[in-house]
Image (tube, rainbow, N blue to C red; front, top):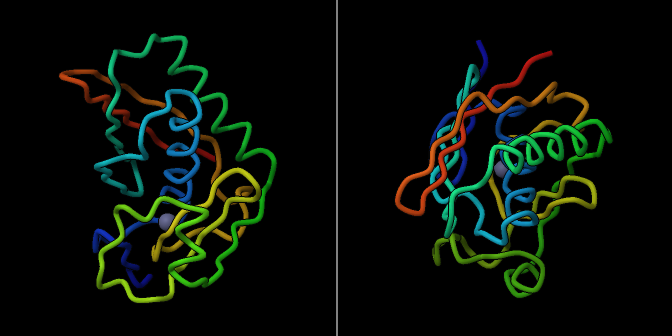
Length: 153
Ligand SMILES: [Zn+2]
């Protein structure tokens, strides 16, 4: 049986889904200028991520976000891990969600040249292992966009 791996939210997760979450987060940041997901629920069959947006996205924007995530996946980018000092990390990524108890060394996970973030979760080695990303549904209420998505072969 597969050992569940823990991320910073102490939830077992599925590496392809969780890596797709990194790509989706960066895509949302680039498209909407919003923060990375504030609340994510990642599971093998389907996942959801919440984003703080000041207004509702259009259906075209959701389709565009989905297209961009797949474009990144299809570039077959390497997913790499490096350990850097907290100071070095602060220059490259947002550490605001990292607890003060995280220590002086930070684990940075990069998806090629597309995304970098501090994370202790489990990831695939290459985006070619993720599969195809599909948005199942979304809703927007009170400044929160919830995106539900799945991965297929
Ligand atoms: Zn991660």
